[in-house]
Length: 339
Image (tube, rainbow, N blue to C red; front, side, top):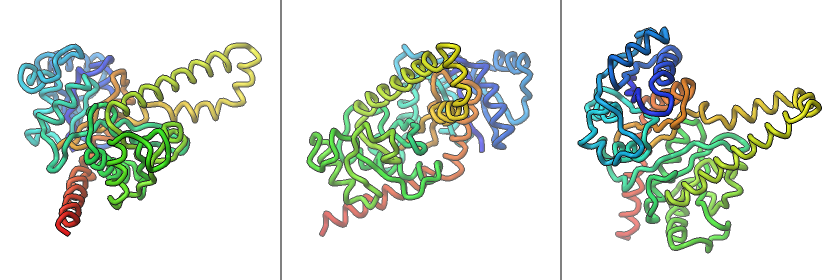
């Protein structure tokens, strides 16, 4: 597999991108194509002692910044490090895309540059979140602030396929994020989505309240991108608060530090479970090509795992399975309408 990686996307580029790419090549037997200023990449590879084995460089001019118009990735900045990475997958010279750059530009690129899978109304950004008993997918994490019920149904199908094929979750449980578990709860959007999900053939477990999601109630939670992004930021903020509180309370005094030593195994386990670096990144499901959005502050470990994700996304033909599932869903809906 050949993975195109934007070498200048993210807060720690290009050094951490380069180191992560080298680790991925060694661990996952992939080929990485780094896009960006070739001279600078080679200089940093030499300084970091990173061998060129399994790594090729595709020269690109400039970087698309957070403050830039994300639509520029199509034309004005098509030649930048991110734009060139998108071009490589679009041209079939790479099998998947990874970047820690502008989220908005990645959504535009993964929608309008690579195009959408047949039948997909809108691609969804899919954060992979920790729960009490593993990980779960959130769709949509912010790509689509306004949605229709049929879009949430597609999110559920795409999330279920990714959870099963990449994360190894058999028959993933799908929940609809809502303000109560009762069927009549929610807005018109949730009412329509509930009916579609109930008759979808997915393992739909019904409306799910936000407080139950991190406790392991579902494997896939679906909602519109506005609600999903608010939920995501709230969970991230609570995680940071808990980390700060634990640090101050457990390690705040000599006596507490001694007690903490006996709890260190459990503390490390929780820390690893909540560490985004172990996950890698967020897939953009519905794009015609495998696209992974890495966290903006990713280090080498996070980039390595984002490349692993991209490799699994492409090698397990997740898009092919999604397209087949959506085609089957469309055929069933047409048959029901005709009858």
